[in-house]
Image (cartoon, rainbow, N blue to C red):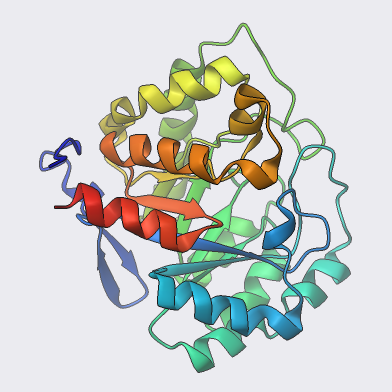
Length: 284
């Protein structure tokens, strides 16, 4: 029996997340399934056409997904910034169609553009998953506030063009604590209180920094916020093991297991069934 999950009873804000009028219990970690309506996301199998989207969502729902994360813009290393028009078109009607067929599923929009969030919110989206830390669009926070959406705050060290630039000299943990503390203060001033923090694995971090951060993940509990971990099939696995992205499921499972043991509340994954199995085994 494995019973190594970090106890978070001293941090009540980590035990739940208010999403619209629902209170989501995070004592049992949740699974966020990745659905990309893009032709160039780094994991080929996550690229879904609108035609096949509901089929993929249905599979994820059956496998145990609690949240579906919709993205219309790739943020992989080397990706180009597509036009707003293209991102709006890629995500148009997607949230509405998911909500219509799967009303119990929570849906997040993976975007840093206020116009895309506005469109998704009108279609019933529940959560904003913002990789930019509200640094790329000055109107983003006002949009989140106006719709009273839950918000995922990711650590992003630079601009879109520089967000994957690595700084080997930085004290990554100290940098994250300062970043999150300052950003959470701004969010609270905007009356955004339902906040999840995401360390941003793979964004502006060396391999060593990524693993150091994962191993000290539980230290982020000092911020008293639920933690989302997104390491699914990322290059920290493929580069370390010398394998292709298509062969990284086993490595992903290992790192997701460690993340749960260290107190992650949400796993953002491509492979829902395997992530759900981690939760079940650790909860025994």
